[in-house]
Length: 480
Image (cartoon, rainbow, N blue to C red; front, side, top):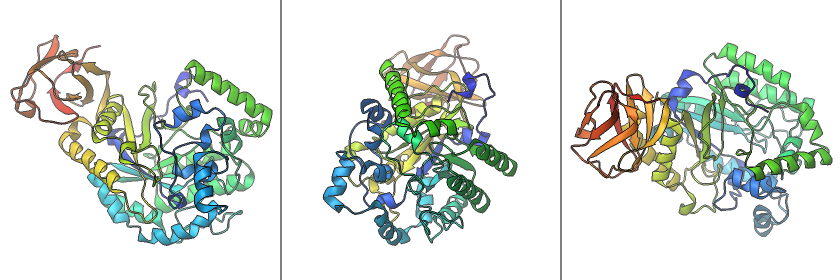
């Protein structure tokens, strides 16, 4: 599971359009929006897994993991389910979701994504509960008809493309609880739950081919793992032949030897103990290690910003869940300022943000999520030149002479300095940015570049309020 860049192998790169896009929208929507429950709290997936070594994966703040969480007595989800639904099965929520989902309006989603300034959308077509959001022709041998009659995938693909966004698809190729529902409390359990038997191998491969051929997906976003290495390589080859500009994420581990071993309790316990030791030592920072596969890394709810030679895409929700959580309160969500600054951090360090939207069962997007998306979009409308199409510089962050933190992005002929707050002085020096030639006049103020000396900026007009202020410097460069 080593990173290919660390193993001396060539690193596959995300296509240019993906590197330029910077902001994508993830959409988690499905049967789990009927119970719509996950525990509230401050911890993200990495914190929870580290702090709960025996059942952390059953305590995730993700509503889409509800079918797993309720299998562990004593977890918040299990207690909620017993109190609310008694012994009712999760699978019985399908009828309610099918009825509510008929209010789905792809155009309203696409309008919102466009207003947010997103350049692509990745729709969850099948999550771990196995329910497909398109009328697939591939039969599920364990749950016949386990798919929607309405083509939600096709409707959304058409709607986002009409608005100039690129359309991609998520598919859970490593977990499908209609094939194997081993309870998942640890990473070893997760690997033990991967269904690699022939029935799922052929099912997953046929589904991927259907998504590629029917919807011409521009992104293959697989989750957790994949059942078979040879199938995976054949799929990659077919996809790249059809779509040379398609993007493939990193979550495609297909180690059948590992999956088989993890079905033995002793082997599982040994792996879990080793992982707990790595967490305790600080050596592990991510719940899902990098497989070294695909075109880009996908850290989840992570503050990490360094991924070596890998292109990368941070994915997260606006609160602590991907799927809609009816328990969430306003304080559980990112503030607008935190969202914009986090996004700028990600872009300055060379990444994309795949920001999740979690609609209700009827397809409506909660007001708080809509407000955050519109705020981000309004900021991008003014400052998008410092974001879209930019690349990381050698020194992506610094602190100005007045103490104001800033980030730096580079486009073809300019550097963009993004101040985290309003500079407190009318003149500030940027210690790691050097001048070259004359610059433009940002925000009505004058900029002076002093040759090879650190850049000094003089603002004739003070900035207004806002979380991030942008100054563009033409002909500047970052000091090595």
